[in-house]
Image (tube, rainbow, N blue to C red; front, side, top):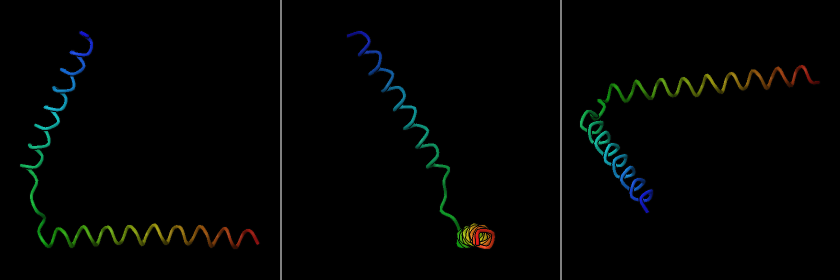
Length: 67
């Protein structure tokens, strides 16, 4: 029974700490400007294209070397 109280108490402390940290992060967070959003979209798009090109090159080399 005593172990159960300790685990519930530990859970409450962890949950309380998580809640406090979450509130702190949300207070620091801000809505991105249009310029920031556009920059993130460009970088993400370039990353997707780059990964696709690398995959295409690898598949092409595999196809050429296999047969």
